[in-house]
Length: 255
Image (cartoon, rainbow, N blue to C red; front, side, top):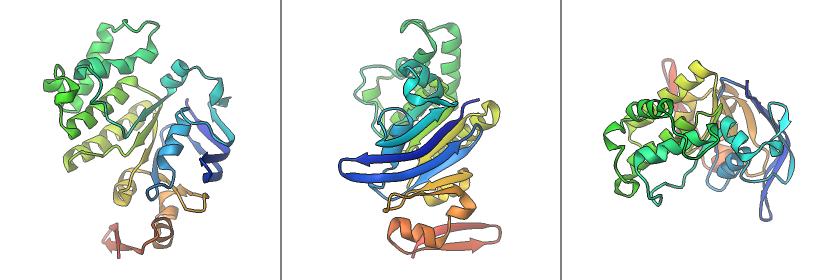
């Protein structure tokens, strides 16, 4: 079981406090969304949970052990992150890049096994990349590069997925496919995920719990039914947001 626990977390960038006194727990099998306007601190929070940034105060516990006590390799076996930054500058093929995700599970950087190759081939097929595996990254489109980044994260096989704008450059069909892939991982392996997105309706459709970042540094955290209100969203985005309901479904839109 992998559980990520935040206790009285304070996160600052420069002189700006992005988060103040955030306490929450991501349990196995949970699907979390992270919402907020540009500059609210979504990426900074994800990097903090990935062990890349250090909080100004509070603590982060991974399975009741302080995150700072884990080695980078140990941490990578538990937590993986999809970054907004692309992979295009990496001088490698699609297959070589995705195989990098297996390295946290090996003692040697040249220890790719038949099992690794079979696993990666399955992931490439799942993401529609099987015909591109010998292509160099710099020859790919933005959407193809994003799918390679997702494949790399899936190959890492962490227990907690941190995803920063995972639908960037993806068409609608692949956005839906991604959500199904993540949901399958949660169901089959009891993994959990936290994804940052600007799409309120995407978060509503595929997440169960939400973190809504506010300008005052005190986010609203909880079940999506409690978070997704016109009042909360209008406050977070500094514009009027209304809810349109039809039968058993609804969407949010700027009024």
